[in-house]
Structure formats: structure tokens, C-alpha cells
Length: 328
Image 1 (spheres, rainbow, N blue to C red):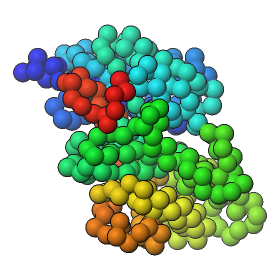
Image 2 (tube, helix red, strand yellow; image 1 turned 90 degrees about the horizontal axis):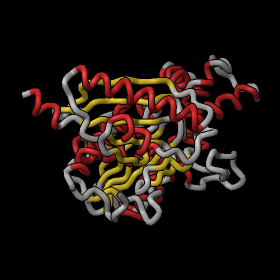
Image 3 (cartoon, helix red, strand yellow; image 1 turned 180 degrees about the vertical axis):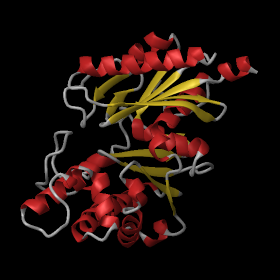
């Protein structure tokens, strides 16, 4: 029994702008989870953080009699799936061109696969979450930034360069605020946790009435708590973010005609985005395309990226077709 359990153990890593989650996935469940705070300021510090986490994960697996057969890595930003390199994470200043697959594979001695974190999150929902059985799905992942992912005709769609689904960098406002990608006015500058925080700080600086302090405005989670307790500025910040998300959803509905739109990510977990986002999407999309479309909150919530990375590795190890085009 122990051997059978070890044979299907894979690892998943989810690298975000504030934390890195490491999991062991076995028997269709998370059997171990570890979270490290993200504080890297350079590619070297980033690599050391991943080495530490993977070393701890490998020791945990060994102590439990498990063998890590492969590792999936999900990371925010643009990734080179074929060569296993993290190219450009907009919300991780100082980190560029990190050979993550080599680092992780060197620790475990097993294959490793790299993918965008939002793609991993959607893959988790598509394999064993709310999107099982759907052939065309769009996911918005709202956290520190805004990520996106696409299932098209029953396969993960990453496009010609492997970067498809960068929904957070859709241009929404002319001459808008600067974005970590180098552009201005991107959806991420408005609808992400960072965008919500920036909006509240700006409003407080202008003298807007609120029970929130500048310190409170430094956390989207804290702002959401004030919104639930009736603070009008906090509610306005989330409603504004949801409106812009709705505009982006409408554009993707009219472009891709999906079966389902999934909303995930830590900020989306506040419960303050879905209703307004859906209302705006319905108003701005073509009625025939909006008809019968399903909206759903992600099942895996904060574990979606790590679970999806592990499931992606598991399916690739089995030789299953995951992508609409060959990228690994």
C-alpha cells in the first residue's frame, strides 16, 4: 500500500507576489502543505527561497516514505514552458530569467514542469474542480495582480509564445496608472488587490470620509473587512474593481464564447466582486453569447495554483495531451 501511495505522489509549487506554497499531492488530495513568505529582491534570493522550500518538501516526502515522481511549478508572470525559465514576473521586482525547472529538478531528481500560475489554477478547476467537463472556460484570478487562463476546445490554451491569457494586462484606461509590465492603465492597476489598495490610499489622501486609516489601506483583505462592515469607501473600491473586471469579462465572452467564467484568487475570495462583475459583463456582452453562460467561484481558492501545478505534472508524466499546441 505504501509503495502504491508513493508511486502517485507529485509536488506542486505556487509562487505568488506575497507567498510561495509547496504541496505534496497523493491519492487525489493534499497530504502536506508548507507556505513561505515571499521576500526576495533579486534572482539569487528568489532561487535560494525555492531551493529551501523544495529541500524541506523533499525531506518531508522521504520521512513519510513517499517518492516525488515529478513537480509542477506555477508562477505569476511570463514563463518559458519549453525551457523551464521564469522570464518576467511583473510583481516580483529584481527577478528575471530564473531556470526554475533546473533548480527544482536538481533537488528532487525528478522531472519538473513550469507554467503560469493562473493556468495552473484553471487546470485544477478543469481537472477536479468547478469546470470539470467544460470545453471552453475563462478564468480570472484576482490577487496581488490579475491573472487569466483559457481552456479552448478542451485543452489549455497558451498561444504562440506561451503567454496567452495575460488578462491583467488588457489596456483599460488611456494614460492610466503605471503597471509592473511597463504599460499604463492595465486592468491589473485597477482591479487587483494592489489596485484596490492604491485607490483607497489615494482617496484617503484627498480627504474622503472613511473609518479606514492609511495603514488599513495597505491590505486588500483589511479593506474587504471594512467593506463588509459598511464602509462606503471600501465598498466603492471593490465595486470599481468589479466593474472593470466585468468589462474585461464581456470582451472575452464576445471573443471566445465560453461555457463558463471562473473567478478565483485571494481578493476574489472576499465575495465582493462576483455580482457586480457579472452584472457589468451581461450589460456589455452580446446577449446571445451571454445566454446560458455559467459563472462560478473557484473551488480550490488559495490552493488552486499549487494543486493545478501538481495535477499538470501528473498528467504530463502520464503522457496525456494537456495543451492545444506543443509547448513542453
